[in-house]
Structure formats: structure tokens, C-alpha cells
Image (cartoon, rainbow over all chains, first blue to last red; front, side, top):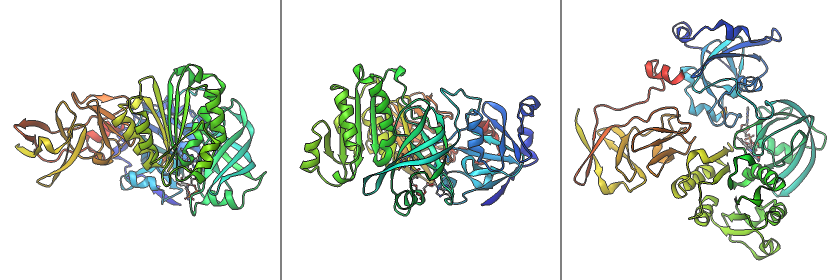
Length: 381
Length: 121
Ligand SMILES: Cc1cc2nc3c(=O)[nH]c(=O)nc-3n(C[C@H](O)[C@H](O)[C@H](O)COP(=O)(O)OP(=O)(O)OC[C@H]3O[C@@H](n4cnc5c(N)ncnc54)[C@H](O)[C@@H]3O)c2cc1C
Ligand code: FES
Ligand code: FES
């Protein structure tokens, strides 16, 4: 952990509109709580943040529309410039630092905790947002039901002490004792006011959370949860056909979307196309679930598994005649298969490793002429 | 001020971009079908290299990093995009594409100048 001090005190504070009303409204629950002022394109606002919480989570919890994507140190989207005050940098090696300018006083809000009152400038419109269902917050959870799906994929449930409502496509941050930092995982299930979050993890070689989950985790283990987060969400009332392109564990949020769409009869009047990229047939999972969704959609849902490393082999294919198997990178398979079938009635969902999502974005925008407002994505890392 | 040679019209395919060095100034040339645009090689959002992250379709340049996009016909911002794209003036003379380059165009991500304050307001 390192301390970052503002290098702009004096001159820059003259840019701040000192709107006493805004600041006075912030309640400080305790002495450990710091006052954080935010100057953004939308004006001045402020929130309270304890010295034990990241600026991002504290702000989001209190309803501010602070910018973020990964909420876990990799993407740089939560950048802010520290105008005055000091913060602790909880993860100095976070890859997100390569996308900001620490020398100019830039910080990652998701990796910074206040050491005292401070003021930030944030290049976005930060306002008090509206929450469709509920604001994200901290939850206590326990692990339940660990199920190995392949040699490096595991499905597990987290049971919460208090129910949570989330949108299909959202994610939570998980933290376990003894492991620094929080990891983002997308919900696989979909239920309103549920105490159960179903999650799936693809093990990354040498990864801290993956190693714990595969080797040491057991039912009833305690786990800290923060959520729900993320905006790559599905809303049936928008009335879209659905295109989903996922690589590896990126399929998690798509399962939640399929669950909701199926249960609410979305495929009675809309089409769905799922492209799921894995390396080989042995890396496939959720095939039975896909078969059930395809069956219930009565011809309006197509699921294609794109195998990047090996052509399909008879047996698995044979057991799932309702699922299509193709060879190639998932975004290429999608581009080929959807040629001439992209439509402006469609909302596209993309998730997985950043190079896969970037490739899919290129295909959708370049080949499919899909416009940015019809694309929602999560880059895993 | 002077007009500098960028490339031949045929060097940059329709709906693609190409990075060109003009006397030490790195310029991204975009062919959007209806014409050419020349611009600094980075995205005004988070400085990603547009030669890799830029995609053009229907005359719109989109950066695949966070989907900022601009209409290359009139340079208007599309959707959630929050900053203008800076461009060099371009003209075609026969098969040649030229740009008016008078020093390098930059986005003031760093400086405490007007642009920067604009950016954060
Ligand atoms: C929006 C989103 C959704 C995701 N959904 C899924 C999913 O559904 N399934 C899935 O398998 N993966 C998902 N991921 C990837 C997942 O969050 C992890 O990156 C991945 O599981 C590897 O974690 P690990 O602990 O095994 O590896 P590690 O290499 O140990 O850690 C990877 C990540 O943990 C965080 N981290 C590591 N060290 C620190 C530290 N010292 N301080 C703070 N943070 C640290 C960082 O975010 C880092 O990228 C998602 C990622 C994002 C951004
Ligand atoms: S949101 Fe903080 S680095 Fe991605
Ligand atoms: S860097 Fe181009 S859109 Fe963010």
C-alpha cells in the first residue's frame, strides 16, 4: 500500500465551486469517515467514505454515478485526479495504472481509500443516479454447492444473509480472507430478491481466487460480496432480439440473460443468437442448460459453440443435436454465421477476455454495422 | 502552414485506417468511403492507439475500447462520446491525399491548460 498526495493544492482549488450546501448535506457517521468532494462535468457533489472502503464503492453505494467498468483495478475507467488530500493506493501494481497518469495526480478510485478529507476531479457526469432496483452494497455470504464443470471451470453458489435484486448481466465483487483485493464475477442465475447467487469461475493459472476455489474452498466458507454492479444488462421491456457473444467464463452473464428471457417468454416474440467460444469440446459446459433453453424457445433461439483449437468430435455433438458446433474463434464464427442477419432490432451482449471482446466489437461494428448504442459489453480483466 | 503529402488514395482501403509518419508527426488517415480524414493517432478518451482500436462503418469511426464514436462526414459525436475528434484539414489532388499540417495536433490530457479543465468540467 502506498500513499498518494495531491500535487495540485493551491492553484487548482480555485477551479472548485465551493458549494457549501452540497458539502453540508453529507453526513459523517464517525470520525473514521472522510469527506470526499467530486468535481465533475455535472458540477460539484460529495460523499462520505470510511478509511476502510474504496472511493468507488463508497460513492456507488451512496448512489453517485461514478464511472467504472471492472471495479477491480484493471481497466482504468474509474480514473480521477486528486486535487487535494491524501489517499492510500491499495494495489500499486494494478494494471489500470498504465491507463492513467499517476505523476499528474491521477488515481484509480476502485483501488484508493481516503486517508482524510479529499477532493477529486472526475472526467464524467457524476450525479445522484437512479437505481432500477437497488443500490449496490456490502453483503455477507457463504459458499454453497461447489460443482466442477470441466478441468478448469467450477460453478458455485453464494448464499447471502440479506436478499439482493440484480439485473440479468450484472456482476458482484467477491473477497475472501487472506487474499488481497476483490474479484468480479457475473451472476449465472436470475431471480428477484434472491439470497442465492450462482457463479462460475474459469481458473486462471496461478490466480489467487481460482486457486482458493479449486483447492481450499468448502461449503459454509465465509465470503464478502459487493453488488450488484455493471451495465451490460438485459431488459425485456426494451423489446430487442438478442445477440450474445461470449468467450470462456464470459458466458456467465449470458446464462442469466437466457434464464430471464426464457422464463418471461421473451423468445415467443423475439429471436436470440448465442455464440460461445471455448478451446475444445472438453472445455464446453452448460450444454444441458443450453439444450433446455433452445427447446423452450421453439425455434427462436440458436446456440453455437465455437471451438478454437479442435474440430467438433462426434459424441458430444450427437448428444446435443439442438446445439450447433463450429470451428474457429468465436467472433469470426459469429461474423460468418450472422452475415446478412444483423438487424437494428437487436441488442448485442459481449463478455470475456478483452482481446475476444475487442475482436467481437470489430466484427459487430465493421461487418454487422451495429451501432455503439446497441452493444453492451464486459471485459474480464 | 503547408500542405503535406500523406499517401496515395489507393493506399488506404475504404473503411480502414492507416498510420503515416509525416516529417516525424504521426498521422492517422481514415478512408470512410465519402472521403478521407487525417487525425492524431490516439483516441481522445483514454489515448488508446486508434490504428488498432478504430473501426469504420457507415462513415462512423468507433473506438472499440469504450465505444466512443464520431461521424467522419461532419465530425459530430455519436452517443455517449464526450470529446471532439481533432483533425487536420485534408484535400485530394489527383491520386494523392494531402493534409495541412502546421505542427502536431494533440489532446491536452496532461496540461493544466484550458483544454484540460474543459475535459474535467
Ligand atoms: C466485470 C467482470 C466480470 C467477470 N466475471 C467473471 C466470471 O463470471 N467468471 C470468471 O471466471 N471470471 C470473471 N471475471 C474475471 C475475474 O474477475 C478474475 O479476474 C479471474 O477469475 C482471475 O482471478 P484470480 O484471483 O484467479 O487471478 P489473480 O491473477 O490472482 O487476480 C486477478 C484479478 O484480481 C484482482 N486482484 C489481484 N490482486 C489484487 C490485489 N493485490 N489488490 C486488488 N485486486 C487484486 C484484479 O482484478 C486482478 O485482475 C470477470 C471480470 C470482470 C472485470
Ligand atoms: S474500474 Fe477501476 S480500474 Fe476498472
Ligand atoms: S479509449 Fe477510445 S473509447 Fe475509450
